[in-house]
Length: 224
Image 1 (cartoon, rainbow, N blue to C red):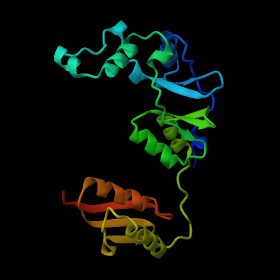
Image 2 (image 1 turned 90 degrees about the vertical axis):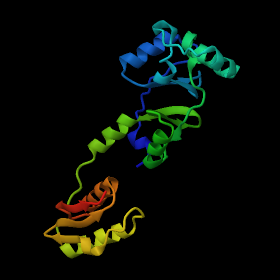
Image 3 (image 1 turned 30 degrees about the horizontal axis):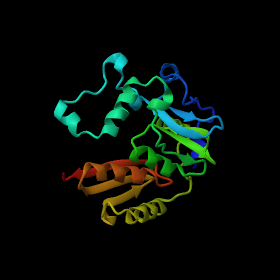
């Protein structure tokens, strides 16, 4: 799947000259965490998010430092912080470094960008212009819309076991052996030691993903 399969196309935006108070109202009214900032041609020039607004003079949350820390803090940092806490226009507060993706970006890469940059919303661009946005909640909504895997009716226990062992052999995070897997009438029995809680969970998830599996019986023993 691609970014275009999960993105919202009708995106609420603001301009650099807009009043900060208006941007705050839009965030609150629409229960969103960030707003792309666009120019008159629809090109994204920045983004204003909750993180840009938590240090505001109005609620007495602007950053204060001891004098000795302030003395060694770069002037550019102090100026940026002052603008974010006192600025009245979106352009004075917005972040100009915008992490974005194209419509055809695989969803796996979208998820990586969201995680890596610790952001909640990713603008989707076409030739620099905003065409949509993908949020973490959009990813969850897409996941919820996918029907459960259909179990293959003719898969034999032997085929299920062979496929499961094949997939196990492709994983670098486990050395779970062939003697630890039994399949009976579509039910997978997993035996033996696991060396971490993460491996334990992953083994169950892997077994459940094999076509034809009815359920997984967890008979593994944790050694951690």
